Length: 215
Image 1 (spheres, rainbow, N blue to C red):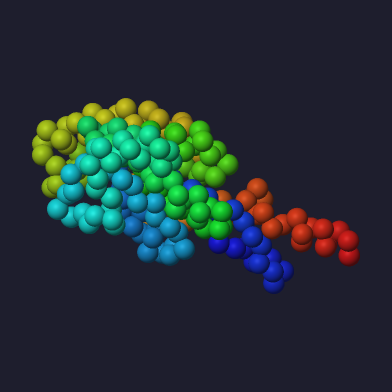
Image 2 (cartoon, helix red, strand yellow; image 1 turned 180 degrees about the vertical axis):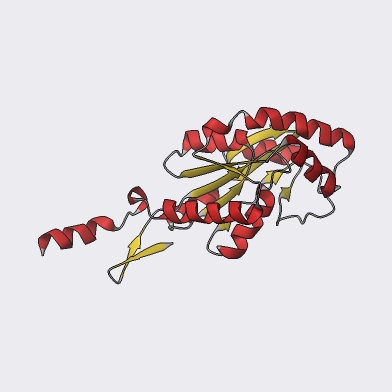
């Protein structure tokens, strides 16, 4: 990704655009909308040991793998981050992300708070983290029930986990309440646009500045 300045293309380093939320708060829908409206974003497709849901496609929503494969990836450093959530393992493959950032491309992450904390700790200058809150626990329950993909027992576990996850909100750079999907999506795009223009990311500014001061 490159910015334009005085008819020149300014190189910049890519960023990690990280979305987290309790299950059912809307991050998956927002991720889909971002990919539709921001086609230059590269989605980091996580690996998981969780069973595939009927609505999910392997390689699109997740890479569904065996536990032994997951542990091997983690041991050899092939994962940027990993987490154990609701009895299953999740992780973000490293190679494609690092290549994209070096090429000035932005990478979108749909991950939980454990993964977001690991990314922020290891790459604080690259990470733009956003936590998506539900408007209420009652609405969160209703969304999980409308999804009709989990048993009543699993829904109760997700609601209990949500309260713990929400307490991590201070670890994020931005926090949005998803009470209106269109409004929240607009806010996300505004954050993305502003973060792309930060001086620290504009790796190609120095030659332009040198020419300006020498004129």
